[in-house]
Amino acid sequence: DHLPAVVPPGYGVKYPLPADTAVSAVELCSAGYNPGWNRRTCMPCGVNITSRNNRTSAYDCFVFKGQGLQMLTAADSTSPVRAAVDCWAGSIGMPQDTAMFEARPCDTCPRFMTTEQPLSGSRSDCKALPGYTAVNGSTQSAVACAI
Image (cartoon, rainbow, N blue to C red; front, top):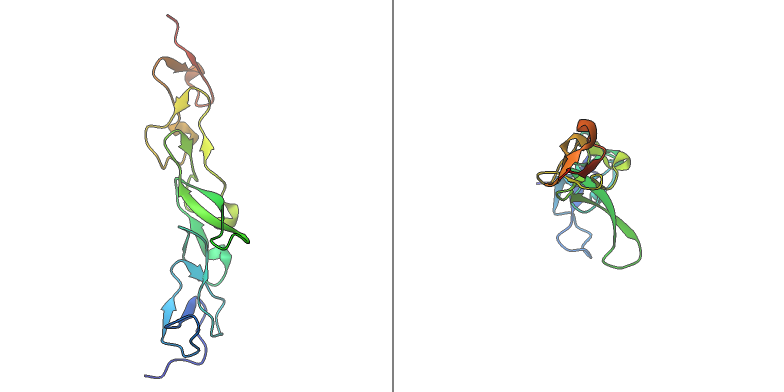
């Protein structure tokens, strides 16, 4: 079979080895993007960040519901790398799948409050810890129960 001279948008070329110049295959960018009509590999979105829709720009990279965005040190220690992390119990992530550039880090629940499980996407998931009660049924604050 003959491989295309250039790949369409959302696809990247796959080289057998980094030093090779011969294209071995064309692949859909599943965790990256490529504007297309070139002979480049898919550009990665980041660690644990998935691409969808057209897969032609970084705006097609998404952080999932219940995750937060963090900047990690790259393996070569020269530049930061975006990463999606699962928000832990006691924290809140994105309320829905969110474009990478609009995502934020995990946010902790207010003092004396926690979530029942990780990957929460709403402040309403924050509940008072045992021995505390939410102020006026709020998800914003909790106080110690009266003895």
